[in-house]
Picture 1 (cartoon, helix red, strand yellow):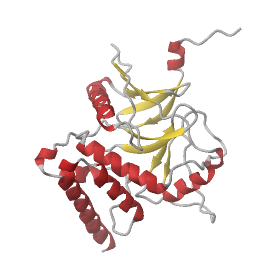
Picture 2 (cartoon, helix red, strand yellow):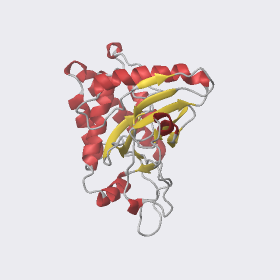
Picture 3 (cartoon, one colour):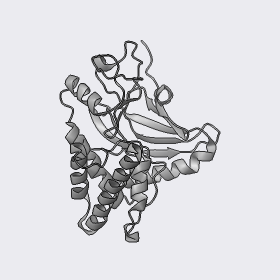
Picture 4 (cartoon, helix red, strand yellow):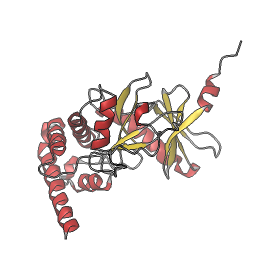
Length: 276
């Protein structure tokens, strides 16, 4: 009879979900817990700040939202150079085999939702080209192709609405600019899928009392193009905008309107510059 694995063995048997210059994220073997581990001990203070922020945002912005915020379980700072651990809900497994490359890697997968970008197609069938099963981007066409295999996925309109509503919550309840956050599709740890907002180590505080939306506008355009581009006539952007304005508290509606007007204006200016 084989012996049961200890909790320590389960934790140490992990798969990397993704990594950046700041830290790497791993999931445990059974997929319900993810660890965020910094690359160097010098980043532990920033990691602890992210842990505290995420715990607060989970209380103020989570709940009935389309997009979920990971729940921060614990922060650990070992007395060594091994790094620090940030524990949250897992991003889990997702994605149908029909859309995977022939050689599928084991472990969790993460889909970043780019409603503001179009990726290149390959071949005459214009099939999505997923570069990695562990971390691949979905634009509108790729998402619709995925829905063809996973019939219970929400529509793109619902995803755009969810993005708008969550961004409003982060701005006016969470009081942050949402800089560099990521909107992703992942597993819920029970064999199904869900939608998350992750990666809060670069967000900055936002004070509505300042009366300025410039910090929010700057963060919007500095992010990867998860949000639909704020162009008139873009149906997904209309869904995003309406949901954003609906989700904002009444006392901040004027500021929310100013944010929407400013990103539309700046997008129009960018388009003119691009076409010159």
